[in-house]
Length: 335
Image (cartoon, rainbow, N blue to C red; front, side):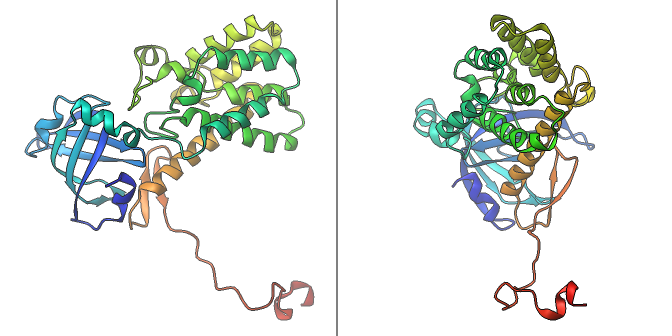
């Protein structure tokens, strides 16, 4: 059974699934009971679950590490609208089993990677300043395949293979659409910053079946890593000092607030713009992920929003048989 199918289950219904352990943490309840918080995924979705010490599945997970794969047996349960099953039993996959199921376990972007890559380079080609355009290309080239195959996060948004490419492209599309509304913004600089804002994530996360933060990612973070990558690329491409400093500032400030990981707050029009575009796509990515995992509950908790999300679609009245015309008595101009 695929993880994407689990939300169709009824409360109390048993199921079995093959999944990769994305993260694991040990905690203690108020009554002193030890329990584990586990995040699982396959190529169709993800879910979280708790496993208490008195569960028969506890022994299978207590020494587990992220990227380990399991066959999991559980009972469906929906807590605050989010699928959070009760684990009953689990067995680690053997290496031969993992190799045969690898393609079905790695979460992958729903978008075509080659088409995304083609479109991203098309947008980069619209940057008219040669040195700025070359800086973008040089920075991406320095990452190898990681920019195109890597994840944009572990959990929050676009947390799958090609996720960084998808997020960067969507941000670039959004920027290109919005820039005509703000003629005071330097379009070349804004596009360059939008494409490169998360490039540090190529080093922040491991390139494994279940990405996690690397040693460098933990110690430095993608903002600092990205700043260094962009600076090297700018110097190599002969980018002028002023443009390079402004591009570096976009990377350093794109997280918005220091408590969110920004080195500084945005202090140029282009940096404010890129930060807003990034925040929009990151939040909508989290919303999309939450909607794909919810069951029948009306609301679901979304950590990235720090709020509950209404999951139902807007109700619309039945269309009147008027051939698309406004009835005479409802036309304001006829009043």
